[in-house]
Image (cartoon, rainbow, N blue to C red):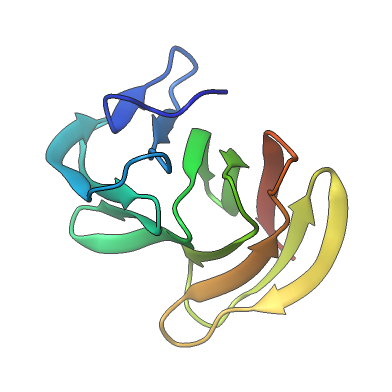
Length: 137
């Protein structure tokens, strides 16, 4: 996977890819339409953030590139790449338990609070793409 030079794009499988962790200056793209929803992405070396219809969906510190991001009825899945290990924050359902899989292995079950945010640490330095899957437990 390479960085997403256009900041966000639609993939042939119906997913989206976004983020460019190699940028020194912050870049953003608003009103990207996909499947009837509007997305906004902000990205650069220290942060990548995605909103859907004005609501929080994804953030990473430092910045990352995400490919094949798909939402399902019970979670999300995507591949993430970055130059350093990253803290991911994913917007999901409020007060719900999820099981998190990183690189095909369970990282355990985690709960979201009233804001529906789930925090996941992912080792990315020197790893290339890492698959992340979050499913309702």
